Amino acid sequence: MGIARKLTFGGGAVLALVAGVVAVRTVTFNAAVADGADIRLATAPTADVPGAARRLSEAVRFLTISHQDAADNRPEEWARFQQWLVATYPAVHRAMRREVIAGGTLVYHWPGRDAAAQPIILMAHQDVVPVTPGTEKDWKYPPFSGAIAENAVWGRGTVDDKGSLIALFEGLEGLAASGFTPRRSVYLVSSHDEEVLGKGAVAAAQLLESRKVQALFTLDEGSAIILDTPVIDAPAILIGVAEKGYATLKVTANAAGGHSSMPPKDTGVVNLAKAILAINEAAFPIELKGPAADMIAVLGGAAGGTTRMAVANQWLFGPLLREQVAATPSGAAAFHTTIAPTMLNGSPKENVLPQSASALINYRIAPWNRSTDIMDRAREATRGMPVDLAWSRQPNEPSKISSTSSRGWQLVAAAARPHAPGAPISPYLVVGGTDSRNFEGISDDVYRFMPMHFTIKGATMIHGTNEHMTLANLKRMIDFYATLVATSAG
Image (cartoon, rainbow, N blue to C red; front, side):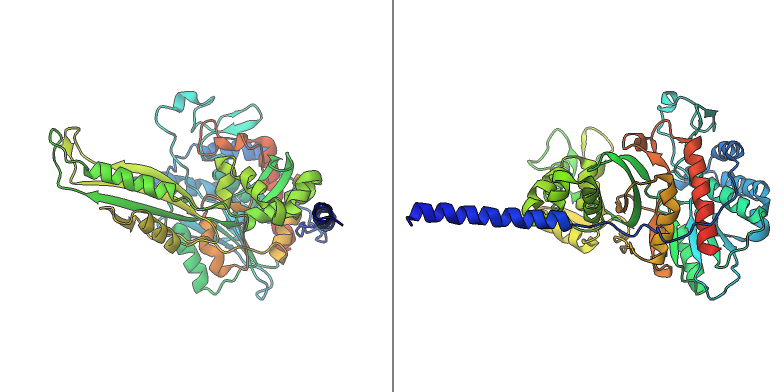
């Protein structure tokens, strides 16, 4: 046999082998996670949706707004809101012990019949973000009116996160009024300062730790049922099993200052700009690992076809997958540590060279990185530059990754299933931050999920204009929480 024929034969054999491996791996691929199908869901009281909508409307009108400058807050609004909760949900307040700690955080405890059974912790915060000045006119209904219109309740906080808090109270009120008594203890924790990375949740976690609480699971906000989920372009139940870390780096360039009519070659602002560019260009690579990669695997398996083939054979198609997930900022964010320069500070006057110019760079840290990785990378990027690097505050490291097979996961998945029948259930990486990160030390697992239906575009209203909770989503939320408690603690 000639050399050319041998090469042709050999190449064909290699291609046939590769094709065979790809085919076998595709056919045998299974990334599905436990869905709680074996769990028998308890029957929960019927939700009073019109009444719940009125109560959510009332809750929105309390201006529990966490401003960046705490001096702009109105503490009396939190006090009024908390008094309203006591008056509005009498059965809850007869059944549960209530404590107010850390200047406004609420901790409720519903004692269980079995002291040996691990409790569960449910969370939703009281505070909301401000409405961006000048955008009030862009809202269909005034942002703090709580208008009930178009089969929805409109206003800041209806989704993030008073909607969850009211749904929790509605579900617990229905259970308590029906005579339900839990077998395992139920805790409800509601911080007053989540939107400014405050200390309320920290204090609550420390309080429960001091009481030797070790929860079966903690459940907070963070993810939902997405109707047009990437990869499958169909509904999927995405349950957050982890969240990225949070860190803000301060970059400072000191200089002599002086009059702007006689600038040196490199001013403090120029040095700062060069440093920002160097740090920003030293991007962290896209990596197909962690909860986001697990999500791609689950959804790819559900999608079938060439998508299933690609995720089942990342040894071959990994570069193509990385290219696809990096195609949009929202997609890329789940697969690497992000770098976002956000704030600048320099001269107080246009014709004065500043003696000090600074910038803040915000990082959301992927589960496989730590804040030390960020600092090392930034120092290497600015080596030899006349700038100082320091954290603006102590970084929050990425959370632990919770189980997708434990009893807690299966209970949450089982309660979620009826709200998207037939949809795949997948782990998810929350790219923002939640209060629940403080509870991983006192919980076997921490999950971040609300059963609301959203499209990817529709979710942009959160922290944005025209935030609203549809009545259908409100019902889903109440039913979910009541069913979860009745099933988990019954």
